[in-house]
Amino acid sequence: MATLSCPKCGEPSTRGGFKAWQIIVAICFFPIGLLALLADRNPTVCPKCSHSWQA
Image (cartoon, rainbow, N blue to C red; front, side, top):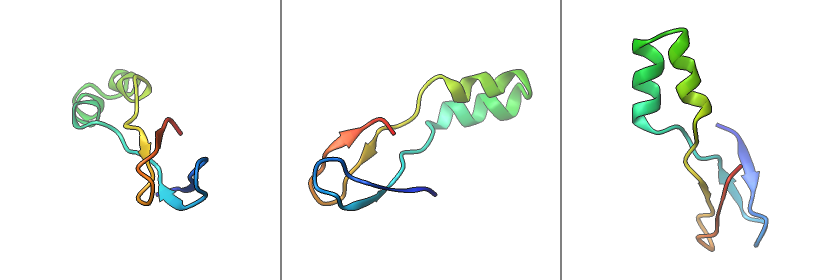
């Protein structure tokens, strides 16, 4: 996983992942299902200050 730094406090945090439904649709309807992965991603949350942002 990619490590990013929090824009608020600078603490390293891991990038948010995909939702379960996106992965299931991508597998079941490959290759068109890969479009589900473009829909949205879980937000990245800082473990120290709980700030969340889309990364």
